[in-house]
Image 1 (cartoon, each protein chain N blue to C red):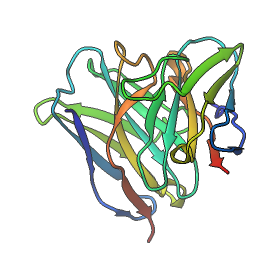
Image 2 (spheres, helix red, strand yellow):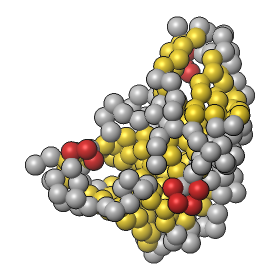
Image 3 (cartoon, each protein chain N blue to C red):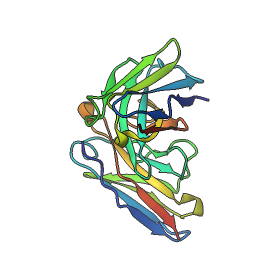
Image 4 (spheres, rainbow over the protein chains, first blue to last red):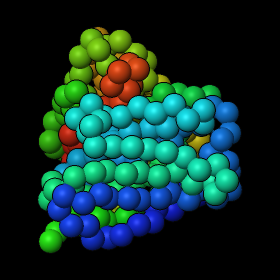
Amino acid sequence: QLQLQESGPGLVKPSETLSLTCTVSGGSISSISYYWGWIRQAPGKGLEWIGSIYYSGTTYYNPSLKSRVTISGDTSKNQFSLKLTSVTAADTAVYYCSRGSTVTTGLCAFDIWGQGTMVTVSP
Amino acid sequence: QSALTQPPSASGSPGQSVTISCTGTSSDVGDYDYVSWYQQHPGKAPKLMIYEVNKRPSGVPDRFSGSKSGNTASLTVSGLQAEDEADYYCSSYAGSNNWGVFGGGTKLTVL
């Protein structure tokens, strides 16, 4: 049973960089056909796709966040990470990592999610 | 990249059917059969209910069905049950430049 777990600081100061890691257990991030994503949800708001990384390392980012976002994978640790620079209060949200499969769920459909981690941007 | 448009709320009585719409553009919903739907209960992670417009992951009741016409996708919940009360989000693939986009969400209330 594949499981995802987000980790990282729960509090980040404005203008600094938000860094989160998603640890994958029960499966490999380099398995062909998988893609991995970061999605966030501001308090009381809807879901916002941040970006995705394929098993090959190819990345795609939300155009509205592209200039501040980097998603990378570490196959040796079976983890993938999110870095969001120059954060403001508007980046306060629950951040989820997730998995999809081009074979079983098609594009942009995440069938396995982490529990989410709350990140607050505050001085 | 604009979010997909969903009605903020929908409701129905137990046993009834309710349909939630999701309107996009010819660059996302209208151009690809990669529309998905998620259910989210308060404080929980989203759960994939529909993928590729009308396919259900294993374990999702067949009371949940999806469809698409032009730039608008729809989720229908038949035989409403109390546990169906939740927020529902649609999502669509939007091509290699934009990749993914979500709708604003619809709060489904079971009366």
